[in-house]
Image (cartoon, rainbow, N blue to C red; front, top):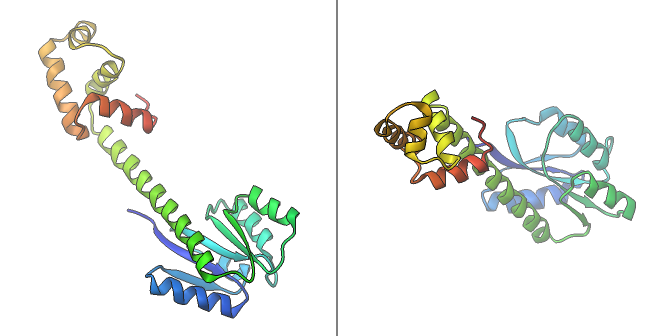
Length: 204
């Protein structure tokens, strides 16, 4: 099941929060508003992916401190920083710690939206890739021990006769297994299967 994406807007400026909310809702993008870092941490659901639009200067825990706390908790949400003023050292620190952008207020809502859209697209692509990998591994695990053994030999460049001799079985039996492997893996060829195994770092 794919993770549901949401934009988390953390800013003590009511106007910023409301403007972003109106734009995102108009575009059918789910969002959640917070006026402080502490409020976000109390309610964040780990099953949600997406990105954070984060004010640097917040009451209580500031944006940089929240970034560090998210890292400590292993919450890997892309962060787009907003600030009324920012120094070069703070900007560098935020970017080195993984922020994807650092925008200075006043900033056009459209500019923030373009950053959000880019990050959500990356998130969706990443989720699709994870789903594809999960599906591939599920199919791989349906192979029998013998089928995995033959697949490994095929991917090593062994011909049917060589495999048959090495495993002391008939060439016909090897061909049957080869057909069954492609059927179970829903692959069109062993070249395609080899590329998939390489992509997903399959261990035999």
